[in-house]
Image 1: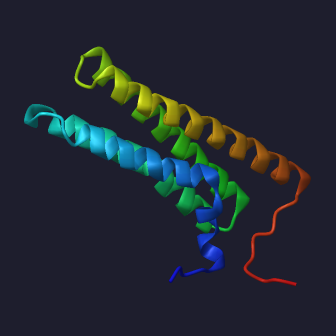
Image 2: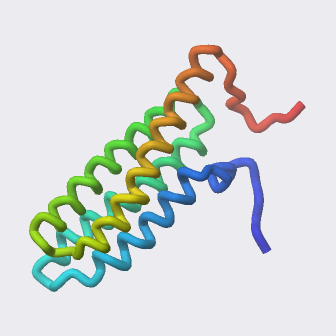
Amino acid sequence: MEKKNINRGYKKLRVWNDAVQLYVIASRILSSLPFELKRVGSNAIDSCHSISRNIAEGYCRRSIREYLNYLNFALGSCGEFYSSYVSFRRAEQISETDYEQLDELHYRVENELIQLVRTLQKKQGDDDWEGTFLRE
């Protein structure tokens, strides 16, 4: 049974779902790195995981200003993760196939995040934001 409440609305966002999927793929690929790379692999996995976590935390803050702040954290984590997997590929620590799989989904997540930020900035400018749990 799926539990539903207004504070879990982020689960409907395509960007959150794609970010979770990116974490699943990154975990699978980077968990197989050799022992001497476990720390950097773990850091990369954490930066990837931070994307979906920041989207969720920002959504749950109920303030558009705070939400945007957390989306910017998510974008920062996107940049950190991108730098990680590009470095792994250049060092030939992941395959071209794994790199392409990560890059395709990462590119989509990053662009979805940018679009969500733009949309929320417009709502903020239009003062079109409902930040309470009350329903009319």
